[in-house]
Image (cartoon, rainbow, N blue to C red; front, side, top):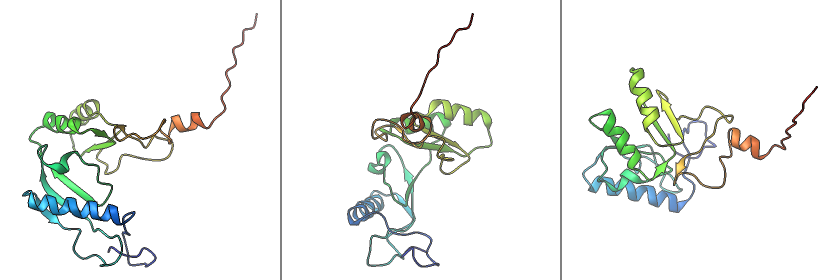
Length: 171
């Protein structure tokens, strides 16, 4: 259920603001007019007031669609159906962002090829979101990276730690 998260029966709250809602709703409408299959429409079944967008699934995204190279930051998933693993890696590497990519497979060789071939900061194998805990970095590459350092993970620890190196020799 989408709505006010102070209610016990609600699973998902609003997006950050009205501009984010309009952007997401615009992408959903654009996908529908671009002949993508709207499997689940997040514009439906949500409260009329507030910044709500429900879970959305858009099927048939290819490199030719405007949705292909967008970071949406909302509950909108574009489903791509490449014909081969190499094509999937190629499509992912064409995107100007590099936050995360996930493969679901039973083939260890395919998982290894995917992990080595995809150019992004977080790789998942059989997991939805490849960010296990704060010890590991949660940051992307390319246009998905913002700032001077990856705040979580080793880089963040090193940035906020006063380090000391001791070089000693005993005769």
